[in-house]
Amino acid sequence: MSAPSTRQRCASCGYETLDTDAHTRCPRCQGLLELHHPEAPDTGPALRKLFDGRLSVRTGPHASGVWRFSEIVLPAASGNIVSYPEGNTPLLDRAAVSEWAGVSGLMLKHEGLNPTGSFKDRGMTVGVTQARRVGATAVACASTGNTGASLAAYAALAGLPALVIVPQGQVAVGKLAQALAYGARTLVVRANFDRCLELADEASEKLGVYLLNSINPFRLEGQKTIVLELLQQLGWEPPDWILVPAGNLGNTAAFGKALSEARRWGLIGRVPRLGAVQAVGAAPFSAGFREGFVRRHRVEPHTLATAINIGNPASWDRAVRAIRETDGVVTDVSDDEILEAKAVVDASGVGCEPASAASVAGARRLVREGVIRLGERVVAVLTGHVLKDPAAVTSYHVETEPAPARANRPVEIEPRLEAVATALRMPHGSRP
Ligand code: F0G
Image 1 (cartoon, rainbow, N blue to C red):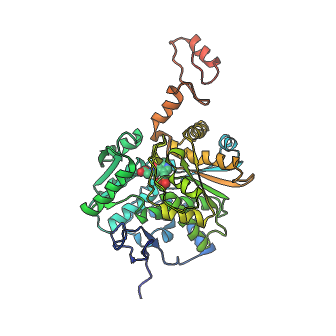
Image 2 (cartoon, helix red, strand yellow):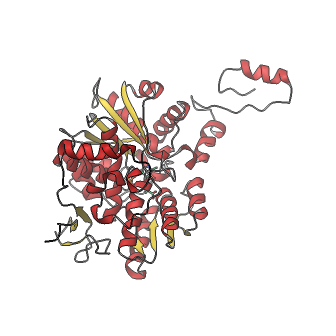
Image 3 (tube, rainbow, N blue to C red):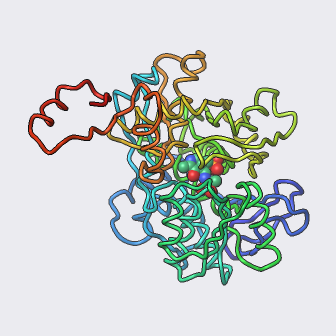
C-alpha cells in the first residue's frame, strides 16, 4: 500500500485532486484550492523535537527556514526543491518600538531579511518547487512589487522563464529593479494591481503559464512557516497576538492555516489571536470585519504603502476563516500612522518598508483601543526591507513640508570644520 499523500481540495465545491495536479484553481468551479496533508508521522513533542533537531543543519533543504518544516509544508517535494535558502529570520526586541506602541512585550519578526528582502521568498520556494514538479515551462505573477522580485529570483534559480505584471507608477523602485535584475520579462500595465491580477489569472488559463500569485495554494504552505518559525523561536510557547499587514490576504490566510494545523498536530497548546492590519485607503477587509463579514467589499485603493494598495483581495474567504478561527481582529491605520511607525522602526536600527510598519502601527492602535491588554505578548511581522522603497524614506525625511516630527533632515554644509561643529550643535532634524 502506498503512503497517503497530500491532496488539493477546493474550498468552494469540495472537489479533490492530487498534489501534482497543475491547475492553480479548481478545474470544476474555479474556486481556490487548499492543501490537505496526511497526518505527520509524529505529533506533539516528537514533531517539535524533529523540527528543533534541524536547527543546527547548515546545508541541504533542512537549512532553510521553510523546508525545516517540510512534513507540514510539502512532504513529497524532496528531489525537486528550489531553495535559496530562505527563512531563518530574526525575532527582535527593540525598546524604542515597544515604547512607541505602548506594549512592553512587543517582538518584531523581520521577514525583510529574506534573500530578496520580503516574506514572499517563503512562499516562492514552495511555489517554484511545485512549478518544477508539475513540469511548468514558465511562471507568472501580478504584483505590487515584492512577489515579482521573489518570483524573478526563484525562477532564475530554477532556470524557468518568468513573467511579472505590475501596475504602472505604483511599484517601489527597489522592487522593480529586482525584477529586471533577476531577468524576468516585466510588463508595466496602465492599471492598478487588482486589474493586473485578473490579467495574470487570464494569462495562466489561456497562455499556459504557471500562476504563482498567492491564490496558488503552494505559496501559502511556504508562508505558513513565518508562524511556525516564530513559534519555534519562542520555544513553542505561543504569544498572545500575531499582527500582520494585510493586502491581498495571502498571509492572513496562511497564518490561520498554520495556527490551526500547529494546534491539531500538538505543536502548541493554544492559538494566538491574529490581527490583520490594513491601510485606511485600502481597507475592504477591515470594512467587512466591522459588519461581521456578511458580504465581500471592494474599494478603489489609495495608500502610499504601495505593497498593500489592493482593493479586491483574492484570499478573502480563507482570510475570513483565519480571523474567525483565531478569534482575530481586523483594523486599519492611516498613512500618517504608518509613516510614523516606520520612522520609529527605522530609527531603532531595524528598518522596514512602509507596508510592513502597518503591523506596528496596528499594535499601537489596538493597545489604545484596549483590544491588546497590558502585559500581553505581541509579535508584529515586518514583511519587507527598508531598502525596498527608498523614495518613501527620502520623501519623509527630506521632502515633506512641514517636516514630520521624526524627520531626520540631511544638512548641507561648506567644506569647513566650523560648519561641521555648527551642525553638531543643531537640534536634530533642523535645517541650517
Ligand atoms: N507587506 C508587504 C511588504 C507586501 O509586499 C505585501 C503583499 C503585504 C504586506 C500584504 O500581504 O497580500 O499576503 O496580504 N505584496 C504582494 C506583492 C501583493 O505583489 O508583492 P498579503
